Length: 182
Picture 1 (cartoon, helix red, strand yellow):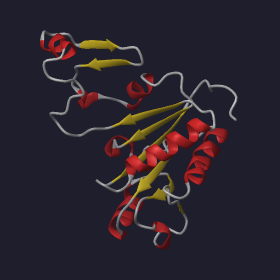
Picture 2 (cartoon, rainbow, N blue to C red):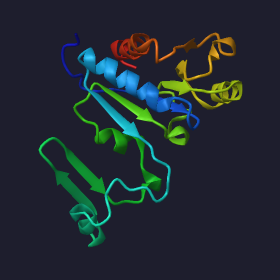
Picture 3 (cartoon, one colour):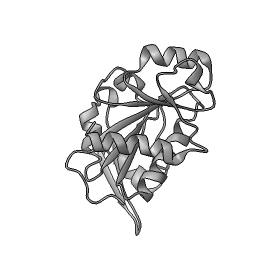
Picture 4 (cartoon, rainbow, N blue to C red):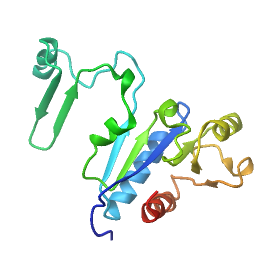
């Protein structure tokens, strides 16, 4: 079991194409790392322009419609903060600020922001040889491949992990990064 929360969390990105297994990978990592005693934050990029977490006609929605830029909803088991903002200028550091108090921050998506950021290791989910080939050009550094396509044939220098069968193995890769302070 892990002891205490680090001062500075590690960040790992899970990237890949639509329906490639990104969410399954984040679930496996979060479940296994949490069981090992780590505090995990998960960040999801939702690219749909009109998406909202809020529900039309609920009080929080009405507050935002009235002009509130920040709405905080508190229930017996969770706190949700909804910030109405233009996200075209969102930075990695502004995302990370929202995840304080965690050992590991797993970010799903944000491929343009994180693709070649050498400070953020990537786990790439792929479902075809073409996606593996593109990933090798687009993402740096790649610490593992996951997803339905076994990338090991095309990228023998990068670990392939079947997260449905090897949850511990993918979590161990991230835990090792944490130990090394990456």
